[in-house]
Every structure is written in C-alpha cells, then in structure tokens.
Length: 253
Image (cartoon, rainbow, N blue to C red):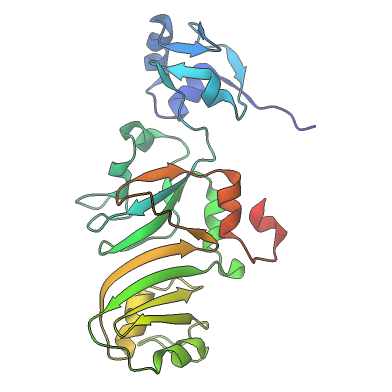
C-alpha cells in the first residue's frame, strides 16, 4: 500500500496559487477555508493530500482547485499564443488568473502557433509532458487543413513515403497520413512536431494553408461541446486515450 502524501494547508494552497502563506493564514482565520464542512483555521496543520480533497475542501466558498498533476484540454482559439512571456493574448489568460501562480507551473504540451486553432493540452506534470512529446512514443497529431488551391492528388503518396524532405532540412519526415475531404480540405496526421511542419509540408507541394485546426492527439479528440477558448480538466481515462496504440506501458502510467 502506497504512503499517503500529507502537506501543511498553507503550503498546499500557496502552491495552488491562492496567495502567499500569509494570505492563506488570513483566509483561515477569517473562516474562508473549510474541510469536510468545518472551518479550518489553523493552516499550519498537516492534512492528507488525497484525490478526493477538492470535493471535501472549499476556499472562499468554492471547491478547491485541482491538485498537482493537472491536465487541461483547451480548444485554442485563433490569435492567442502558447507562451508565458510574449506580448499579446496568451492561452494562459483563458485559465483562472491564480493558476498562473501555481507551482509546478502549468505549461502547454507542445505548441500551436497563433494562427492555428484546436486541441491543446496544458499540464503541470513534467513527466507526462515529456512522454507525450517524446518521439519514441509516436503520438499522432491530426490536423484539419483548409488550402488555398485544390489538391493535385499526389500529396498522400508523397507524405506517406518516408522520404519527403522539407526545405533546409537534411532528415526525411516520418510517414504521415493524408485523408482528402474535398478539393481544398484534408486531414493530415503526423507523428513529429517540427517547426510549422504541416504548413511547410503543403508549401513544399506548391500549396498554402489558409486555416489549420488540430482535431486530435493520439486517440483523444477535441469534444464538439467545447467552444473556442473553453477548456476542461481531463481524467485518467481521457489521458490514457492519448497513448492509444503505444506499446510502451510506461506511457500510460
């Protein structure tokens, strides 16, 4: 049986972005923190940090935020950047403000450029982040591309060849799957994450991507009921879908 982690209340809430330990102490003295319905005024006390804690603890009358190990699925809208530091609108601005102060820090799993929309994952779990982006796991990323000019019919074989080279690179791309939807729309599934890869692949065929939307990551698809800018916290079953088809058992641990 694994040992249950415990934490001081002030340390836990501070790590979740609720403020400094002094801020948390003031909340506790004012009755702003409850555990199992009772005010928890001594925030120096230690409590078990179990998965049901967000259902048992409230802060300022609201359920406790998700604990560390948070994984978020977002429908990234156009015009926002996957960065902590760049100017302009950032994906982190779409999350609760206090989450910017969480420790460990929430980061995007890979990046979508400003003009690409769709499925984006964010997490504070560094091990999970690296498992998803690691080339050895071959997690498939599926994009819906709307093109300026009609496809000429040669793209699917070219992208699947394993010999296709991007400009100024010396290593061929891994085979990618192209499903044609219409003359100017296709689904492209890739297992790599090279810089602007999908746009550059179509550019190499003499075409141009007018709109790009990521629809799936592994076996995890973007739900229809999540509008641009909205997000949800994933559970263990959702996360396992990312590695669907991966033979490495460590990838779903």
